[in-house]
Image 1 (tube, rainbow, N blue to C red):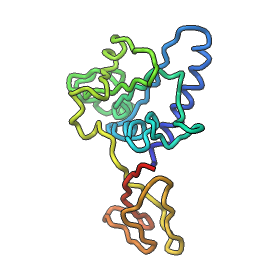
Image 2 (cartoon, rainbow, N blue to C red):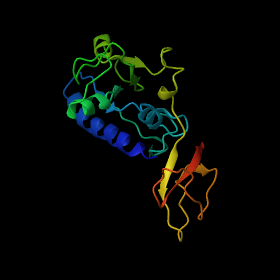
Image 3 (cartoon, helix red, strand yellow):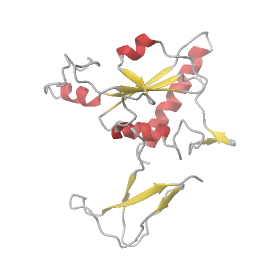
Length: 199
């Protein structure tokens, strides 16, 4: 899936860097990923029940089990990139924020903390300062943008080469002669809806 690779790279990079600190003594390793308002993208990459990177069904395998990140205690997802972009463009920040680094605005939507199995508990002052609530918190469990979603994959299409179906994904519709199904798709692009399947 398009967003899996950067999220996976963040996990691997943080886990590698945190290892040296944990070797020296007590250490709390928190990976903070700054994202835009499409917060379901990293949530899907991390927690989708059939392939999430932090689940038993992760598509990243090590031996007979999922790849793990033992030096990361928690991941915090900040839906804050929009405000950095507005500030860089010298546009109004909005949402009651003083500046681009003001995390808790008057109308700020919550950020998400995802503890990793076996990790240390994150102190409350950190989650409060970052306006982060657990993924299972009732305040967001019914909000669609905080739920993992199946993903539409964009594939470069050649009329002479049938599209390749990614491993682990079952196509609902695949046609080598398919035409773009949306008026705003650029020429040569097509969409295939996939349903994630448990292997």
